[in-house]
Image 1: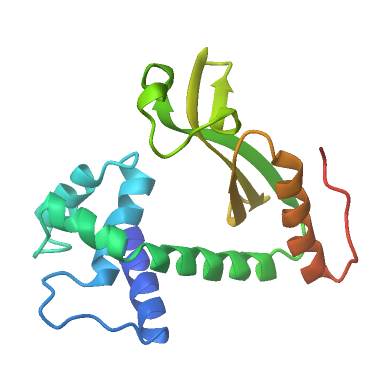
Image 2 (image 1 turned 90 degrees about the horizontal axis):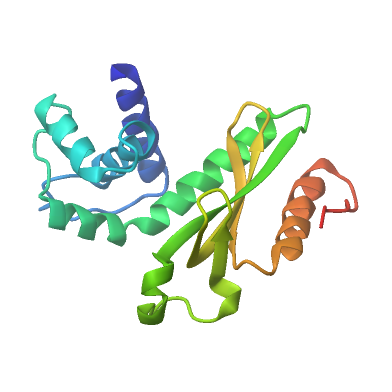
Length: 189
């Protein structure tokens, strides 16, 4: 895990340097360290930022760790950098995928459960209402459609409501086939 943490930090730091990213000199923690903490939380701590923060601080990887509230604010401030990192990695994995074999999957992301739907402010209407049959529950949220290589590296993703799935697949197929030199491909409905 030691080399993985260092590799994540170097990747984030090199990307920020290549983008000529400016940071305030008074910052206690660099944006690369914030990104590393968030990525490590997603990879090793099931998305729990608190566990990742404590681990990195106790092990001495990031000695000047921000508090919980300040960390979350910094994370929201640099959210566009995560999209840039994802796009760069996706393009790299597309170029390295010589066989052009991709796997498409989708799964729901719940924003609020059925008993809170009345109070939902972010999503309104039936297009945002999803049903997860395996857990026998209804919720409001979005559906993520993700395309990965055969080795599991993500290259594209889209967030949609629960009704407009075919448009998303066609858009993804156009992006991949355009890079391969084909005119088009039929996407599954």
